Amino acid sequence: MSKKILIVDDEKDILELLDYHLLKEGYKTMKASNGKEAILIAKDFLPDLVLLDLMMPEMDGIETCIEFREDKLLKDTIIAILTARAEDYSQIAGLNAGADDYINKPIKPRVLISRIKALLRRTDSKVSSESNEELEIDIEKYVAILKGEEMLLPKKEFELLALLFSKPGKVFTRDVILARVWGDDIIVGDRTIDVHIRKLREKIGSQYIKTVKGVGYKLKL
Image 1 (cartoon, rainbow, N blue to C red):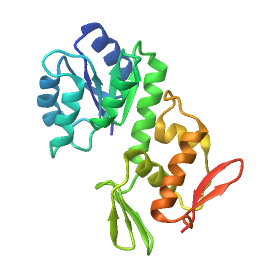
Image 2 (image 1 turned 90 degrees about the horizontal axis):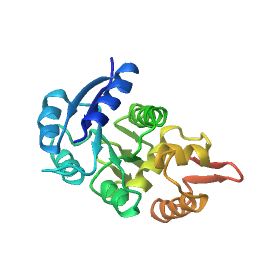
Image 3 (image 1 turned 180 degrees about the horizontal axis):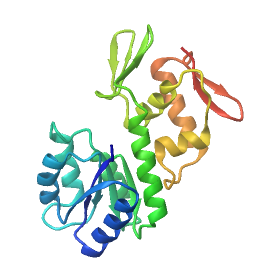
Image 4 (image 1 turned 30 degrees about the vertical axis):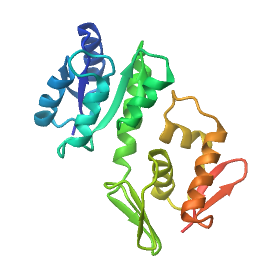
């Protein structure tokens, strides 16, 4: 079944360009020119992913993203913010509002399609929950459960743990971790991964996450 994508942007040329390339890839699409219209369309269309412009009149991308996350029907929709801004604060604001990723304008079609496929794969590869006797993760609730106690983890820490948990024993290279958790266009270094691994070990115990020197990390259950 074709995935459904809602494109939200107040610039008609961008709407038509994105719509053209997404239809060409076989996606089903709908378009909206502002946040309020996007919410109304989404409740009927129920998109798998939303491409959401940051700067729009009436209701901007941040407000729209918050509305999605507060709606029971739409709260789990994948949201990628489109922003022409290069400032870190606009990207951070979008992610803090609940967006899953951001894509900088001007948009390169090949990069766009690659990022969309990566976001959809990330969701498709997840199951509702995974567990062993002591450690469990609930994808729907975004919580980790250690020995019966729920732990609320920051978004990236949880996604990193969920990635490792998706295939216990498999070694995930640093490049794969960066692409799957942070996205190809977000510039972070190895130090960022190390910091998140250290924080996870402090919270769940060092026995679960193993370092494979010079390669990456794996989950040992």
